[in-house]
Image 1 (cartoon, rainbow, N blue to C red):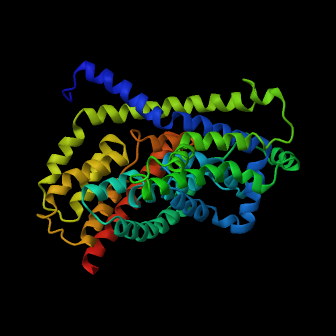
Image 2 (tube, rainbow, N blue to C red):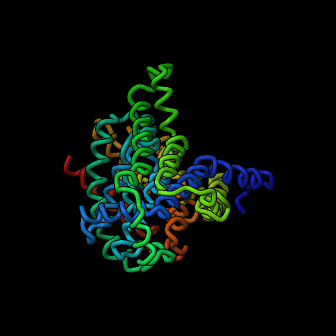
Image 3 (tube, one colour):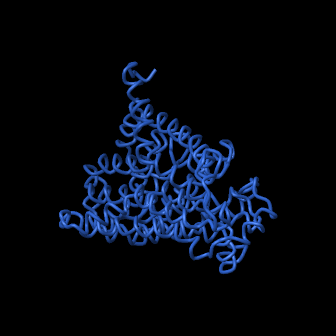
Length: 407
């Protein structure tokens, strides 16, 4: 149907599964192990109790959206969700909320800055291709992203939260009370989450500011090494190992905390890999190129990069690929579109970023990370997250369109 030969289909299956899991597979395993230790040691519930005392039970959606928004500026959205998932589950459980609303708030917060604000790879690559000022792109992205986050939080509180799914159906109030008796402090419980984030942020800052000029410096190499998501989460895992009050061999056995968590991780890994296969087959089928060619000739102004990126994102799944591909297509058209000033270019990059949210579905690894880690069924995932990415992405595009009239 697409003109793909059988060898290309086989290669796409191998590449899609391997590339997706090469980026996120080990991170999933480590994240699940950290989550298991936080839950079974009682640390997640102690941490949730502390956070709820600070923000109140009615502001969990706001808290998760804002945390995701901040964390994803230097950290990949998928990795950020995996790291923050134990906190979100325990907060939702303690507050008596559906995991659907809070998980979608977290993922939308992560995605907004992932596609709009450098130094994440997509926006910074698009800025480079279009020769846009990175500082201006960051400023525009933060303003548009902050306003879009408000819509995302309202959407999650008013709509997504109506789909009730227990954050952790196996955990009862009695279980929580028992675990709280021997739980580590909130501070110690926070370290397996906080330290990996700090390390990954440190790597992003060093790569952004010094990587090109000081790549041979020993300290740059060290920060880049310990700040890679896999190494940062290995460090987080060892910190999680310090949480139980008593250690025994059963914890590391196939029937213990680690064994059961690896069983959970295997399902998530297989489904995420399958999503990667789907996205790669669509990408190699040429459908993204066909959509790009059909839209590139249209005189749509600021809407051209948005619609072009949305079409490519929806067709092949990766926001980063959509951002880079769209920027490459749009670059030769800037003069024809009347794009001249630094602000104009920054707005174009942001419009491309807004399109990179529209929409997340079965060919996007983030869709599977969200649904599988949160226990959300696929149909509900489409109803709440796919719709959410559409609304937030389109709202961001409207804000950028309005900015072209103001500035």
